[in-house]
Length: 409
Image 1: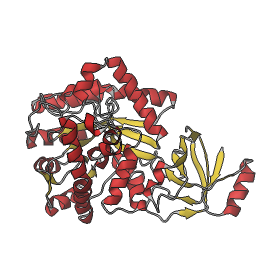
Image 2: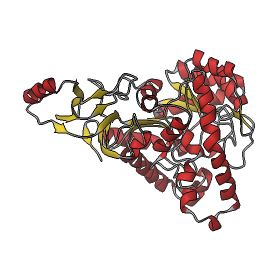
Image 3: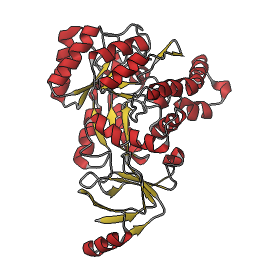
Image 4: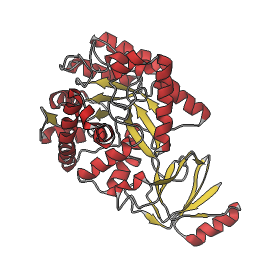
């Protein structure tokens, strides 16, 4: 058992942080949390351990609810990557991405689409060896023939094929269902919505019948309206935009709240290239596509926080997620960028911490396992050098990362 005293504890709820808290923990989980130094001293004597005095700030480990482990995040499109490297290399990339996320403070992640469902093997390896983050896997995202992310292997047309794909992937061991309700950035696809409203409703019904949550990619307002009407558990991107303009649809926002749907807005993916790719690549080497991507991401610096700000004012929640792996979104800093963007949308430090920990765990159905620092739950937490409640950039300055009570980095 270990005991750590911190300057301030943010426990992953919206409760006021606790000053000078002492946390007792081991590989079985959090044992005791003491706000009193006297009581902590008595417990330390009882357990015959020495309290580690620190000048750090503790939060739960971050939860990234939207990643793609089999994608590199280096600007390479997924469909291009498959032509460049072998499936075995993709599998190794996926494991490396998971470990990179852990080293950057993400103790739990949710893979919302992997090539041939390879993220399942990474999840199983991490569970068996206890050497990586906790991983929830959606397998191959459901899409229509030649639909968004079709190259991952989840093509299904019509109600019967959709039901069969869900059942087949459940047999392989997925934790939830991911479905493409709108088109996206895959090359050469139709920009029409992949599925009809009837097909979306059938996918929701089948997923829930089998006890699985279902989340839907919805990056355009018309497809988003259709997705919300079908009643999923989550919405990926949840963009109130059309043609690069914000659509302030209050009725839609209220419907999302009424149905208790949890959106994951993935703000990092729209600007991540500005933090790495475009900063490091000399402008004279930019391609025409680079120039277009740069201009779009600059536009998103204002557009995406603004459309989230509107949703927040309407009461729509947001959970932490980055889209790490997609296009320019590196696992090294994706969650930190997402949190900065949340701040730009008007969220304060405590709101952001809650969205990326306790609320995220609740949305994913793992609140009895992780997401908060609470007696009986996993000892997944971060020690930060600066106060994240005062400056969200403190998550770039991690002193220690604990996963299941073990100091991993």
